[in-house]
Length: 486
Ligand code: GAP
Image 1 (cartoon, rainbow, N blue to C red):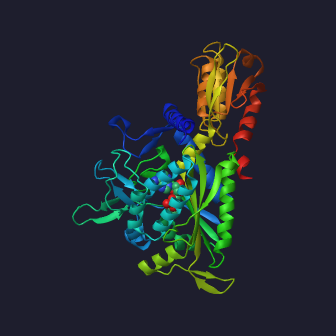
Image 2: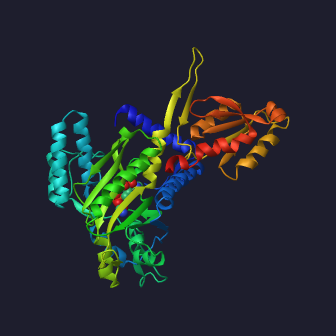
Image 3: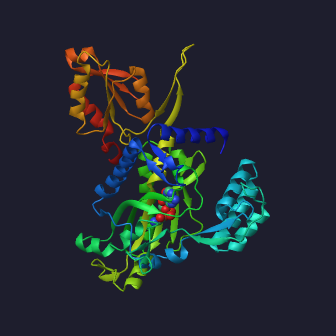
């Protein structure tokens, strides 16, 4: 990370804490590594991202429905899905620092360093060698690369490495009252399996015809060994996933469709299109015959935000085999029974949250001549902003608070608002800029006379005088999800 990017990222993290977006989990006990809590503004922003996703996937597609499956699932689910045997990361320990690392991440860091030093060819060669080793599950080759490229432990600085070993990422616990007799169950590492095991329930009760999709938003858990980059890699996180069931042989068409549709969803919120790119997988997961990541240019480089996978009929066939229940579809158009193929779109809500925050964050110097001034503004899309408008009486007296409360009562049925009468109006504006509130509505003495207020626009800081009767329309028009969905 360059110094500027490093500084920007640090500033975004402290801003997220200072303004109630993200807190370290159990901070009073010094925190829990790679686990985070969302504060008052973070919870609103997260909910708005969820709503944008849910509406665009479920409400805007007649052939997609949403479910909410439990986090705990029958343990055989994870045997069938391949997670018990194959959901591993290649880990290596440094014998001096006793620290454990993901072998591929140590190598990726080395590649990034080569690139930074202008050693492009070396970077490319190492990338290719790592991809080949990962594809072949060749743990010895991974270790050889670490040794050959003289990768040292960031803590001890030594190259005293163990062998590379596979480490399963699923958390397990026990269900039942008597620990000895209880069955081991897992906290789901992806929400997708909750969709697969309900495929037939939804298809039958919803009379769904192929092609159709099932969507879900929910928590997933992975025992990530390395906590990295704030909320990018967490142990408890949220996914927004959709499985789209299609006729075998049509999957590549739908794969292309969902690639483009999902990228459009990302760009609609006004993010610079140059900051997005597709990255085709070289090592395919055990269930996929094609896979691509949508990557975003974070301050620490291009990283995955969403995955689009062509999962073939792997999951349904496995569940069919392990459960002994037929999970097929009778297609009246071709008069055939088959196990549907699946295209999956899977986006990490927390990564989308971080992307949104970073993309919106701007430090502005507003100094004029000798008068020093600055602000931090979150230029969030109004549909995503946690607070839609702040209602600010100019003073605490002369009936202005009462008038402001009247406006608040009228608008709060439709929007999340804040009311603030403390501090100068300038300070209050700055606080709202910092959380990305699109409108500040100031109630002054003129408001009592002619029922007008000033609206200050966050991005331009321009103010206009409008009738109170117009507020519902003005705010409603700008924050409506219609702006993103149609
Ligand atoms: N069902 C497919 C699946 O789970 P994945 O690529 O492992 O695929 C999908 O995960 C998305 O979930 C990723 O693109 C990422 O945004 C998010 N994600 C995965 N692991 C995460 C973690 N430890 N912390 C935060 N988000 C994560």
